[in-house]
Image (cartoon, rainbow, N blue to C red; front, side):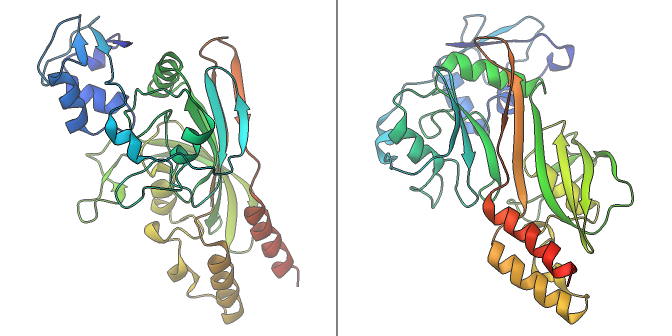
Length: 323
């Protein structure tokens, strides 16, 4: 069982289901509401309605249902995993670009979860039977550090660190254009795009979203940038970069794809199109993740080096510009 405490004044008065949607990663409101109705979620050891208004010092007890028969539909697969770290509580994987984190609509195999089920007997089930061990996610085409929990207690502890924004994440991105200011803060709220539910957009009515950035290196038409998100909204870095007219190289969804190669001299346009086709992903990499270990309470940092295809892309830029 996992317990969450209402300790922040700004959480008082929130609906129980809304609060949990924000604090239990990857769960839909309908799933959480189902858990509340079935008694898997209690407040102060009492059954409550989904719209229960939270009060200060409320104790929310969460006892996820055991894996059900649907888990059998997720078949363990012998997928090569680049394991950066493992102990009795956590596993840290260097996820390759192109790998989906967990099964979903239209994706039933080849995911990180399929691989995890093959290699690890015990994984947390806080996020449900379809997402064993999954604490947070990376987009399919984003490579790098992703953390997995083996136990529910470790999962709850780390998830709480994510919720309180105590986990330090750093990303490397190749962005279009040269930034006017070499480092700074991007503070623009984000919400789901009404016209396209698979996208997110800047909106004053959205959730507060903050990203710090630092330009590490400049090329003729692109920049290598370090992003440090203070908040963890879906597609946050991609949306913030695009909104500042520096979309991530290869990011078709947010304006960094083939259309961005237009307007250059023909030799540059041809070069960028070729490299984008070869790279075949957006140039975003989760470089490091720092948190407090759930058992030892020591600060620990995990790092994932840039994948070879990313290094090759940078090298090709260097060679082309030096001709």
